[in-house]
Image (tube, rainbow, N blue to C red):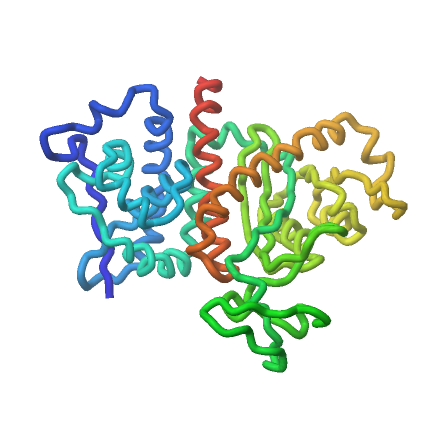
Length: 362
């Protein structure tokens, strides 16, 4: 049983050197840190709910999240390497809130606390808390959005994709014995990964190799191109449309909004779903011979053309978030844990963009 640790944020962090005086005044983290601290303060009731009121004090969850953000910002490959950086990097200690002479945590602190933070859905709550900041809220559009999905490769070898009934041939001898897939029909209906059962064999387009993966989804507002929602689902052919519909449904209000999307969303199901949610679907029209679900009544407007330009900014989001996923995927198995990483990386993406956006708005 662990009690919530106290996050002390005194000006001077102790010792003979004050990191506050070392960090350059124009460093981007100086703008990011107050935003992070304000968001974490809003999450204080959430932390109270997921930690016991009694027991030995744990590492403060605020410090854990600040450290994980640093891992995302600087694409540090593992939590063990993150702890090595915290041992000697003044910038990291200043951002996390560790005094100069404080002992660095054991790397297992992340393993022990990740499930607690996962159960509390802290990654999503943290993303929302950032967007609720009084400085950030005016930057967001509440009228125009874009959606998209991407593959997230699972940390599971194809050798682990075995028949559910155990009827396939065993692998060769040795720790990583070879498997012969010749003549074997692989299907998600009959096979599953033994190391990551949530991963599914999937490919997004014809001609591509099928891989064990998950699907990541984001909703981006079109004014500042900030991510406003993110999720991860099992990889299925309808996963993108279902996830986008659920995320737009959770945020749609009384007034009409527009939702941009690529050709994968040009389906009768998605278009009808958006219209039921009082949203105008600005999806790219299919040109593969199938009749598009939208027509000139939508495409003739200038707003549609602008949506098609802005929705492509999602590729920048995915490029950045998947870089983080590629660095850290060795630590996450299963859809919930991959979703935790994906959402936290999306929040880090927003934080990296905010210094420039806030500077331009000043």
